[in-house]
Each structure stands twice: as structure tokens, then as C-alpha cells.
Length: 57
Image (cartoon, rainbow, N blue to C red; front, top):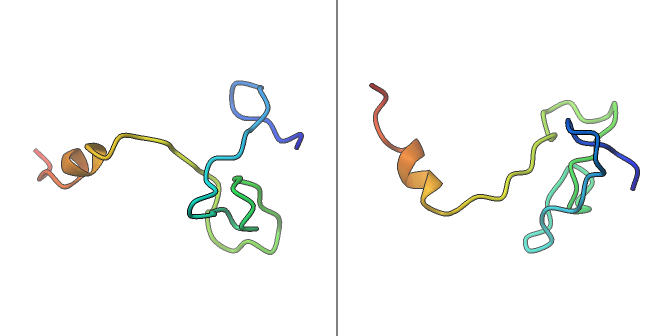
């Protein structure tokens, strides 16, 4: 793969279980047939969901 991230380094597969991405290749690659926004893959701790569910202040 030769796609680069915002830091200029090569992207690496993010998820194989479950397999994700627009092309279901585990990567955030896309093309003109992608009418959505399938461009971000994030690995985070499950506690992030607790933070996201808090009411906004």
C-alpha cells in the first residue's frame, strides 16, 4: 500500500476483526464510488465511549 497519513508515513491496516473500510480491506482507502465518509480508522480504549456519552457542558 502506498497511501500516506497526515504525517506523511504509510498507512497500515487498522481492523481485520471485524474487517472494516469501504473496500473491506482493513484500511481507510476509498475512491470516487464512495459517497460517504469512510476515511478514518481509530484504535482507542473502550473507555472513550463513556466519555462520548457524557452530556455536553
